[in-house]
Length: 632
Image (cartoon, rainbow, N blue to C red; front, side, top):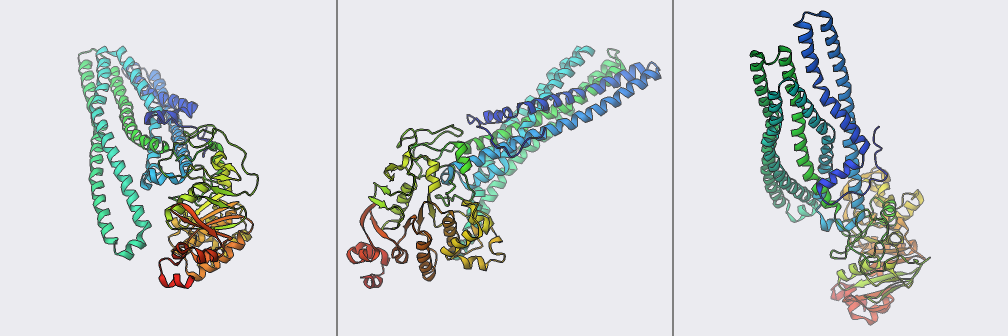
């Protein structure tokens, strides 16, 4: 029976080691693995049936001159061939199902983990590492599943042939019993060397993949500062180092491949020579000589499978170790109860994260994004809320409707339904404030008088959205990019969000409008166009609380003025926090808070603060003395 892919529930992997992870992949499909083992064993053992039938045809038919017996044995050989063909087909079919099931299961748990850790991932693993895990390691770990079918069959076939040879000649049986393990001992040192070389190669390959991604992402910047040549030379040097390491892995692989073919061949030649000498001396018959040759030739297949299985196991172990390392990454603690994995997976929305912080999590991402160094979260696959330092052990009732947000660390209070702007002297203070208000860091912020860390995380993610100006944009049609956080977004809502973000001209400039495909990070768009697309995506999500971080830093003044006016109308009656130093946005806010050294130094209307707060005036003027004088 073919596997149901993708898996609705891939299960909880065993992360105690690479071999335990591989064993977990086996345990997830026990009956299919058992069926593969039975087919593999029957096929491998059946290979030894034909030499026996041929020996009987020689002794009972040809040498005895009995045509009837000869015909019967020939018919039996044909039937055995047909049966072996069917067994071979079923073995290959079943093992393909097993490998594909393991591959899909690994891909599902890796994808679930990426959604769970969210923006923490770039701080814990390079993009190249993640790419190589998803592109190569998952496949190599799945290839190890071959050991469960033909691998088991090879061991049993080896024992069966040894028993059959014992009935012909104990000496030949001893040669087989001792010879095959000797073959494995010859290749084993090469396998250990391969594991070491493969581990180094895979690590360097991941690092180089990450470097190439960084170069491509920043190609325009590199061209602008004249750095393309420098980075090209560095990349070429790293590529040459990887090439040398690849030659090392290839050299070990070539020796293993050569030994896999040559050593069993030498073993076959030695046993046949010994059996031929025994036939000459009359110790065995001619038919038994033919049978011995067939049995030993048959052993070449099991021995090859054993050696190839060992080869795959070494490579799969290296790959599984990398998969386990990725799955073991824990999100930063944000205090309080977490959502369960099942609910988190249900809430995951494509395009809702970016490397540094969340992008559009109305249908919230399945895990927190916090500064590194926070307390650890729940173990992957945990079944319910887990108490973490900084918050209560269980969830409490969240505000039933719009409520004030209060950050005790800074003294900021965001009134429900208002447009509040925060002008921070230090941009890092603004980012830290956004993290606390969006529960991306452990804090003592409250929401409607309820500690924010006491509310279930999925509820916070569903109602509070923190949107950065450089949030990640996934590849796909522009319509799907905008609807990532709201799959039910219709044409009118999309048009309204684009209008509020002053992004209609972006759509009009594209050849197919909203149906135009964008590449990863929307690199075909300018910086200002990308920023407006991100803002439109955040507005389309329609969260109860929207926290915007420098939403207009890459647009011109005329566009910024339109966005400031339209943003106020689009968010009328809903809580909005804008972290910015733009006078155009600050002038549209219901209340402005001036943040100095992480604390609110003054609050009021934009015009009032310009009159009575010199520090605020200097901040808004951005160091321009003439502009500061004009603002007085």
